[in-house]
Image 1 (cartoon, each protein chain N blue to C red):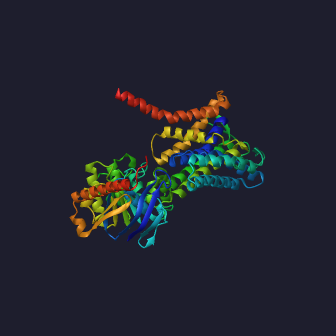
Image 2 (cartoon, one colour; image 1 turned 120 degrees about the vertical axis):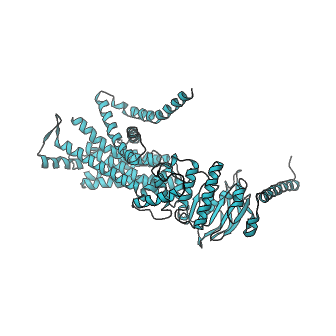
Image 3 (tube, each protein chain N blue to C red; image 1 turned 30 degrees about the vertical axis):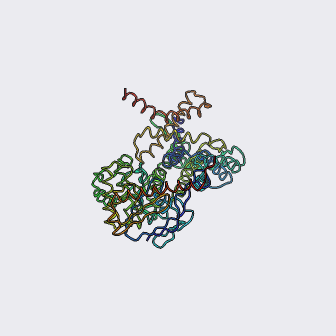
Amino acid sequence: MTFLIGSITIGLILALLSLGIFISFRIFNFPDITAEGSFTFGAAITAAFITSGTNPAIATILAFTGGMLAGATTGFIHTRFKINPLLSGILVMTALYSVNLHVMGKSNLPLLNQRTLFTWFGKWSDHISGPGKIVNLIGWSVTAADLWTLLFCFLVILAFSLLLLWFFRTNIGTAMRATGDNDQMIRALGVNTKWMIIFGVALSNGLVALAGSMLAQFQGFADVQMGIGMLVWGLASVIIGEALISENKLGLLVAGAVMGAVLFRLLVAIALRWGMNPNDLKLITAAFVFLALVLPGFMKHTKKIRLTK
Amino acid sequence: MLELSCLYKTFNTGSTNEVNALKDVSLSVEEGSFVCILGTNGSGKSTLLNAIAGNFFPDAGRVILNGNNITKWPEHKRACHIGRVFQNPFSGTAPGMSIGENLALAAKRGKRRGLGWGLPAAMVRELKTRVKDLDMGLEDRLDTPIGKLSGGQRQALTLLMSSWLRPDLLLLDEHTAALDPTTATKVIELTEKIVCEGKLTTLMVTHSMQQAVKLGDRIVMMHQGKIRYDFRGEEKKKMKVTDLLFLFEELRRKDQMDLGAAELLIPKKD
């Protein structure tokens, strides 16, 4: 059961990543690979600041800001120099690799015996429910600290989902959605689409970096390789979410992205438990995203053929 | 009101595809007038509209609107004075967003967009009454994504959007060219109504000589990047489709004569 709770917690943390990818992939229609760099960037900033004695909450906020800066750079390169958005992302991601190594000072920075957001929960739980308290959850025994952590992650992701939903319904947020939908139209209505893209990509990468920051604190280390494959992971979550929802309503899509992230993490955890070779994980994730992208079109096609026959 | 002086624009400068889209175009439009811009394909009429809207900056010349020199203003900054409807019915609306959201975006044209609610309840009521005026039965479908509507419906909504806040200048770029005849007629009627009711200063690019004769108080004919004829007042009122056809034919003949003359003057190299 601890294994399941751990997976759901990580799933919720990665839901922040999937919200970030949702913004770039579904609002602006381009998969922003900066995410792979900014995920690690968030983790690196957090780890570096925490090991130098900064308050973990401040370190987390700094990670979010750092991610936004990385995203803003991608947006700026894309809009100012008219470089293809994918290429802009690749440039910033590559540059971030070196930046991350500099921030951490080495390729792996452990956070053992450091104060993180999650050690706070351990202490808090000891304080409220007594030290090392074991809770009976539908026949399973779970530590209270794990439950508090899960609840915290749930509240964080709930807060960010609601914030995003609110934002996308405000004047500036609807203008941002219109920028991704039809930039010519919204420019004719007086919106500076360049700023919208820069701000949107920044927001997306801020969320991704926040996911990296929280994951580093949860697993107790930051690693310079931890961002690799994160874009495809996020895409998988968003796509699963859409399959779960199968409706084009903004609120449901955001909820879908969160649920998709949790479900995907659970599926992966279970597959690994069953003995899937961890080395195959990224191959299978990529194949999965490929299928999810191709299948809907393929099914439409076969339907058409059947109808015409 | 609108003052264009000596506009020049060349596309693909220096390449074999070099196009002189605008050559010394000057035009002055008074407040409240409705100008039809006619011209053959590639005569520069859409380019002229895009130069006014700010899709690109002219190579030379000035654009002055309401006394402001807007020549170097970016497109989005000009938008607070200019309403636009495009030739492609899909260009003027955001397909993934609802009818209501599209209209709400237009209701903020050129204004600061903050963190206020994008589609407040009070606005929904106003939207309903104004969409009802279109008489297309869309008032009860404000939540429908605009991408599900037909081209004609989208073009009618784009017209409504472009004039939601009274624009100082309305630019219509062959906005009925992509529609079937019946729908085109409807959209033209709506255009007339909106322009007359709001007394809007309007530039309408069109292919249709019937539209040019029927609508507006001035006809400007463009050919090869230049304004060749300009009719207004009584002269415009007397214009018939046959007159316009004759003028076009004359322009074409002149071109051929020019080509012939050029061939005579410049001996061909073997």
